[in-house]
Length: 179
Image (tube, rainbow, N blue to C red):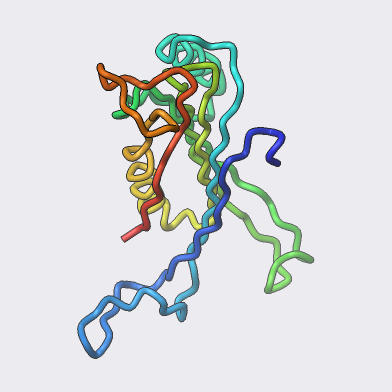
């Protein structure tokens, strides 16, 4: 996976219970009696030919808009232009793979955000995928919080005089937990 540009991968498991309080009044998010919401998150830096982040984002937007089943949107992030693509899918599950032996529908959702490096020639691709679609608004909030932390900084930690990223800068993002 590293050879394809994958930089980071994580699986998130969150309590599906309503917010509960411990006897001390603290929030108890570890209660799994109502199940767990799960998501998979990946971050990849994909090599591209681009030298201008705005033009690259416009091209990504044009390509992704061709699928009428995807919700594609331009984003203005603190680090520059980006394009998000939300995809919902429904799968028919055969009875032999379900817990109750009955056919079932499985709905999944994915958001993928493409962030061209302002220093070129890469595009960061953030992907969050889940079958816990009842918790989609929380996952979208979490993805938004992550995207607001993205920056392109000099890997040596020396800011340039005009505070713009230096050539060869790397992508950095800190993760945020869902509240």
